[in-house]
Length: 121
Image 1: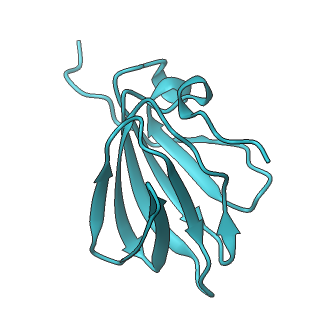
Image 2: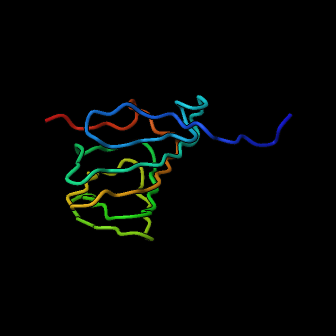
């Protein structure tokens, strides 16, 4: 039995907002609930609704910038910076800039739509 899993074909999450999401490990790729790791590219001028997820989310910016509004505070991260957002924290992610933002996201437990609690307008 192998002692590792080599991911060569991540699950590409279908989106309608131009964001690219490739899940390397998590619910969609292996059915695991413990952790999810995804490579993402947020296009220029992209944003999503506020959410209050039941998971911790770690983000590492590879290229570009990403805006976070966390419990009313606005932060902008750039390439080489990272952040951990505690579960049950109200947050909005966006890329209001003119270049794509390339980043890695890790969620514990794994990302799921049942746990993200996105707000509806």
